[in-house]
Figure: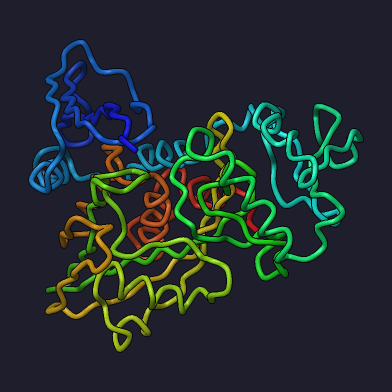
Amino acid sequence: MACNINIIHLHLFHRTSSRAISGTTLTTTFRLGTTQNALRKPSSRSLSTSATFTWDDVLRISEPKSVSDEVTDLSGYFEKIKMCNRGSEMRFEFMPFVIEDQIVGYIHNEFAENLRKFQNVFKFLPDNSNGGCHGGRVTLHSSLKTPEERTRAVGEVVKSLGKPLIPGIRNELFPVISSFGASPFFSLERAAAPYFGIKVYGVHMNGYVEKEGQKFLWVGKRSQGKSTFPGMLDHLVAGGLPHGIACGENVVKECEEEAGIPRSISSSAIAVGAVSYMDIDKYRYKRDVLFCYDLKLPESFIPKNEDGEVESFKLIPVTHVANVIRRTSIFKPNCCLVIINFLFRHGYIRPENYGYLDLLQSLRSGDYS
């Protein structure tokens, strides 16, 4: 399926010391396959180019000599968190998806109309006891009693609806659960997860190197063939948490596939908490929790992608990565949250910075369970 081409504007504010020069904005426009909108409207006094961005572009944008190096200016970070938490005002358009009296997801009222014809799989209940603003909720037919039966039946519906309604089907199953660690009610195709509003968990790992007292992050550039966020910047290693695999083991697996990191090194990855967000976009209701990991890598290690999902890697100083996060929208959005979390934990963002606690709290804006 061809990727839609949209334009992301990267606003670089020229500053002298800590004061902006009024009216001077450099806007660089890159064409990326993403559904994101520009952070701001381009200035009437802007210089625009249209191209697929390169590592040279990234390094130029990140340089403190281009724009003052204000890692502790938190406004850009707040913008990225806002980008991951869109559409809260649209929650009334979704009805609860309930199994065994537990809310496991939320389905848009219009998308739900596509499910009504599958009367042997889905049942629509009229009462409002579980918070449905339109006087209803969705559940599965009572004949579907086991996780295996539910997985098979819902899977056939997803396959029947196909690409026009659920693009990017990849035959990867995610567990449908009420909270992390709970027994799954069934498993659902990964691409369908946001259309059913189920909780999705993933692992994101920052791989870093220390050289001469300075920390560097390995950053990946996603393949142009990816169905989501092609060509954008990403962590060294990240992936969804499928059914039947523990977080730590998933990190080891993804390390091998995405960056060629052997188990002898990846097993040293440290779990450092989690971030969450809630994003509503039309029929899609994403409720994601990302488990964060840090891995200190040897200076001599060079990552190598093994599964074709990453185009290339670059080792960049942490402060420069922070500049890219603050100034642009070329990172896959949820990666920004994990990198901001890294900046907190490694002392780049401190309590002295205005908005410290609000920013820290906003990293867990989603359903944190």
